[in-house]
Length: 281
Image 1 (cartoon, one colour):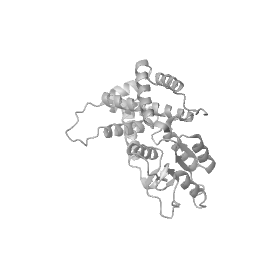
Image 2: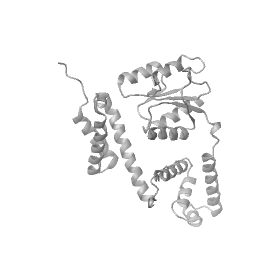
Image 3: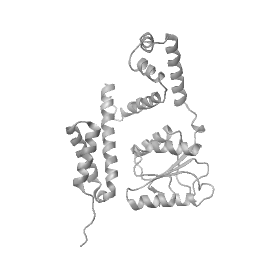
Image 4: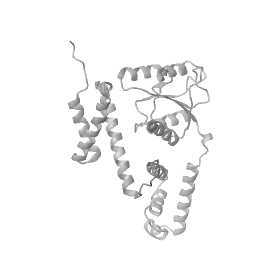
């Protein structure tokens, strides 16, 4: 009987351990992270034994590490007693703070530094002025301009953004939330709709985002319909699918502009920004 070319779990564990040590800088924490990652992988069963799944495993490890950082960050900056309401979700506060952090990162120096010092560092305008060696009036102007820039970014007219139509019936809530957030941060207006009965997506679209399964069809089938429809044939398509090499190859051959296996992948936002930039030129 021919021996199946399965994933080398010994080599995978060693590779994950090296990656975890680089991420955490601590051998014990790295081992805990690897163990948690392997538990996730083992729950996948038969679907995660092929050699090409190693890259997906590394992505799982990275996502688990980011979740740990997120929880640790929340515990550091917020001390809130959970109310009696069982539906209370503290992560909303974290997501709002992370959104503010992203807006701060978009500011140019020294406005970014000044805004952080004033609103999060507790420094006064006089202290910042001495530190920056600038008049207090300049610091006040920078703070005002930063506030206005962030306010305008938060209140940007959604209808002015290019529309990204997302189709998928197999996404979990976390995956859908991650995709919606990434689309917004990349400058798209996310539109969630069921596929029209005729099976042909609309034409007023800047980007199609297709899940692995869309009702009774696959994302690959819908992409082939898009490429065969003249009005939308040139519209960029981001396709989500399995990590199998055959599936990835089929996506590229069919004309996918981008392919990912997980909507929570850290590669999603940079990829969406690249697609947005290329379509704008």
